Length: 109
Image (tube, helix red, strand yellow):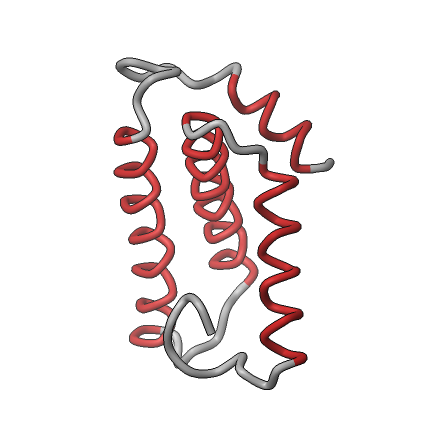
């Protein structure tokens, strides 16, 4: 599946207050779901010695899907398409790699 198809199909399930005019809701949802991913990874470090079992990987796949859903909704609310977001990100990273500034701080490096 490509990003455009995902973004279009995921939008069919977007049921939240002010859908179409509310970037705040998906932003908050993105924060919450990202936190759930981080919490599951933290527990792998704490409880499983850093070993990701198939069960944990399956749970993370579901949580990452939720993160992707909220990213898609936020992009849609902002009038952005995920294909362009993904392409711009790869171009930015390739530029940083070419200039040997992958590491470091700052968005404009």
